[in-house]
Image (cartoon, rainbow, N blue to C red):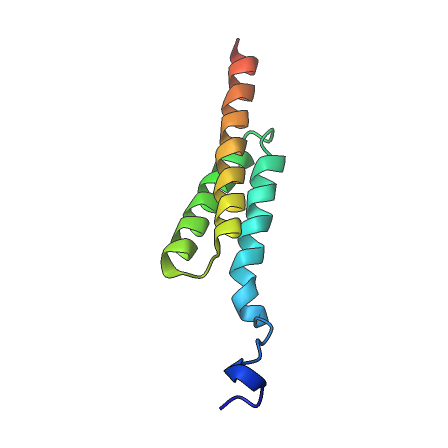
Length: 90
């Protein structure tokens, strides 16, 4: 039972283990976007980010902003990588 009036339960802060996938998805999304100009690392990092975010989202470990940052960073970083490779070729 709750000791508060109206039956409101106190909200506890999320555990650090529950925050780890969210932080990892955001960090990987930002790294995917920031390292788009590194030829060998960028596509692997972006593909890995996309796989990690989609698997974690499927299991329910991520919230919507984390999914958007992770997938958006990977997708935009990959598009920038492809544009940079096109510029180098042409």
